[in-house]
Image 1 (tube, rainbow, N blue to C red):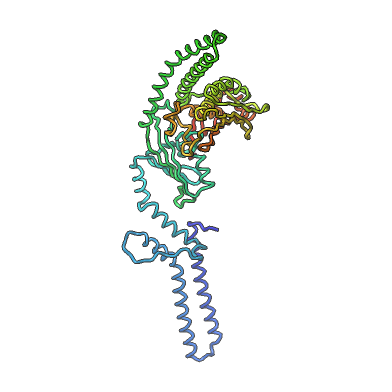
Image 2: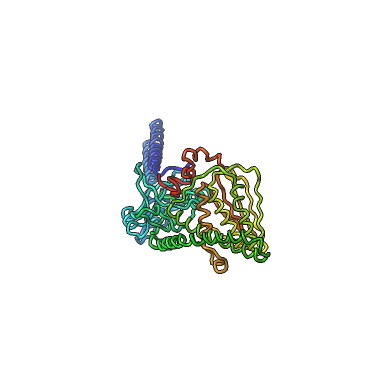
Length: 496
């Protein structure tokens, strides 16, 4: 069993007392033997007394050496790591007796403290405060036990500091940290574009974040979080969203008119058109629908960025969601020389859904599969049950996704440099799909093998698992979103 460093002195003091007591007892026994043999010649008696005195001095020396041994070991360790010139050899603290008594842990703490820094805690705090970044230290219970003055933390009503960073729900700090604790000795993780407040807060800042984990750190800080304020840099991206959103609003009207005229023309003229003309009209209709979808995606991105993506969820069947867009999706695939099939079990549980939003997710995923498939390629839409969720998968057999790209696919405006030059798109379809699915209390992900194809899968909660929360909130999605506080807060708050 490990010895606490705080208990080492008490244990050593008891061992010294025991050794001193043993030396005294031995001396008394010898004296007793001499007095029992008092009739010995005087010269022999004097000789025995001299021997006893020598043994007592040796015993006292051994006891004193034993008592001062830890001081010698610790002094040699400190001398070894000091900046002063010396010829001292470092102590070997791996002896079984040192391990058993806990002396090795004491010396190791001296070394660890030296490696952590050669300045005092006050000096270290001063240095951390002048750094151009935030520094946060978490203990093994994921509580904030240190932070400098630039760290994004706040003091709760319970006088505890917590981080205010709003991590994405599919990429939470807590999820990474739990995996590191279970499977790693050390680990590192980087996040970009992490805000500390909702967009409507004037004091809102946006950070790039680095977290470093070290199991059983002797300093007591197992996780170090470093934040870099990138608010101004990311503001440019937000300004782009604002500009695009205004443009999208202006375009929505003309596109609606165009689609309306196309519907009338197709309905009135189809009987008079030959096959090639009908195909042409179908392609025009599909293109107009896709343009309309792009505009809706852009507007939804703007809403999601401002945390306005609040949904009212109702009990529905996934089959109904798919049926609402299956004909349109099949036509889209056909005009692009792809084959789209649906395989949906009949008796799936009902889900908590906003039907229109989920049709947009399915449309985005199928459009994505069409873009990255080959002519004549097969695209399969399947569904099933996974625990408390109903899942829907869209699988293609196209070009696939490199592992380095897959982790970024659901970020806003992300497009791989390998495909951006020859595949059209805005880079926000998957981002808004993630937003919609997470706003349902679900999750979305991808598995892929480069050169063989990809499978995108989203999970939506089974209605019976969230029915009580929905009814108590008048079908509002606030109560079922996976967060630590509030709706779509994504805080992954740590420290409370």
